[in-house]
Image: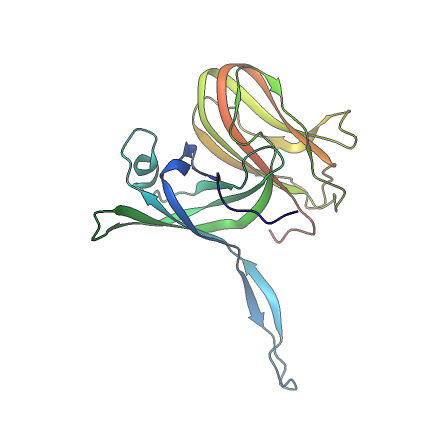
Length: 246
């Protein structure tokens, strides 16, 4: 694959699309702690991997329109929130999913009159997942729909998954969103544990396979059912390549 820029990317926070108000992404970090385990007979440090972590930092402009950046970021809730970053938005494109706590919303007014805010979020409980977009980026279903299939390739398929959902709006009714997989892009079955909570409005959710050795077949798609209108949402999934740390 050729080198790529970050042009046209997206950033979602708790069901708010704030990409147009984001000046820059400072960090999408996936640090892993280490544990020192050096014997007295060694001449250099010995270390084993410890807990993994995740942080996301970005700079936003000041926009007070309903549903824009200030409304989405000004409160620092004591509960976990959801952040998704999409690179090259579209089915099959890379994405980041993180559940965590926003720890700062720091205003900075420059000499030139600019007003920007530094936002920091730290993972809580799960770290960060580099995912594949299973929806067509930010996708709209006017009614119950079978989404496009995404080819995950022929890599390891028996280490379970984590999946992230952000719902931006729904016109009316209740929508059920679930994942299906297929070995051949033809015969589809519901992915075990891959159903999200029924949707009636703006929301965000993370689900994962109950087993860390669950099989995820090569092809994935997202399916919506129920009676509803104009559901706008995004789904990203990480099929683990090895036994997951959490």
